[in-house]
Amino acid sequence: MRIAVIGYSGAGKSTLARALGERYGIPVLHFDRVHWAPGWRERDRAEAHRLVHEFMEQTDWVIDGNYTNFEYGRRMAEADEIIFLNLPCCACFFRAWRRYIQNRGRTRMDMGEGCPEKMDLEFMQWLLWKGRRAQKKKWLAAGLGDYMDKVTVLKSQKAIDRYLEELPC
Image 1 (cartoon, helix red, strand yellow):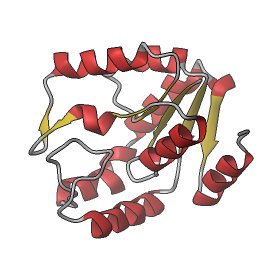
Image 2 (cartoon, one colour):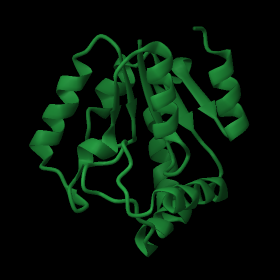
Image 3 (cartoon, rainbow, N blue to C red):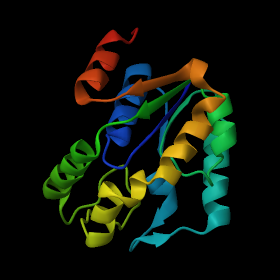
């Protein structure tokens, strides 16, 4: 089984990916762990591509993240299911803020090592505006267009909870 989890920042991609990995007993790759090197520096592109390529060679996987430069076409094509977390802007901001409060000064397990949780002006702007520009929405729609038969769109925490409850064991 191969599952791609995409969506807006703060929507719960990493949490859902982790739950799916545990439910099915399959490995999970968080793209934030691949992209970010210690100190919030971007990892060398060649190394990041190698890590993603090697991970995707497995029979089963869950991958969390949007990053189009990480095997996006292949990921969408090979995924058995694509889950798009399309939660409202305010919900994503609140979730990201709560995550910041809970993890302030620590590095989450789904984040690159040496990248402690932060909430700065740039990230707040991304959550509220930049990450939801019309261009981003078009990109998401266009990227999913060829795969609508295997896309599940979840628009609230209740929908996410219901989805997890209804999964076969």
